[in-house]
Image (tube, rainbow, N blue to C red; front, side, top):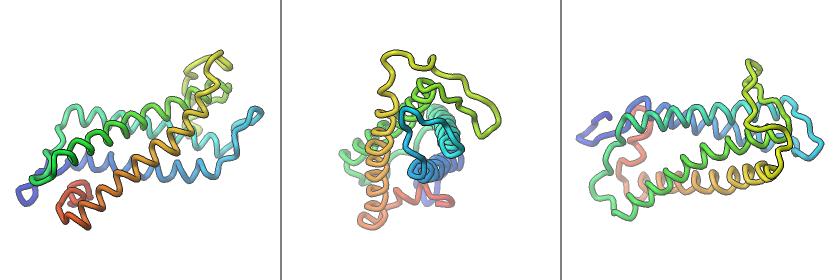
Length: 182
């Protein structure tokens, strides 16, 4: 935790991991929107393999970020933040972390279900999470897409709106505590 102007901020590692996840998510959504529709007879191509690789990387970075949070406390909320905002912020963060773990795992499960090899940036193959066409798991791709488009994007939008509210309306330092050099 760093202290600036008497206010505790996030560590450089926490900021780096936060912005790395943001960058990876932005790239992932661009790749996903340019991916061919994955139908029943689709075979993985370079774009699908890139999507798989970025998803696996997001999962790994989020796990590292959760480990960092486990061993390094978050700074306390700024004085004057209403308790309902502190609570809602924590709920949104927890839900985002859950979705940032569950969504890539569901994508990995769906790739395994379809028998797609998950080759991490062309370097090595990740193990399948199940045998191809395991009964009862055809839903994983649909739920993966719904969580990605509605869950993660919705919560990320709410998170961004709250940060902008603190910066532009409340004019406090909530946003600046997570900005590089802030």
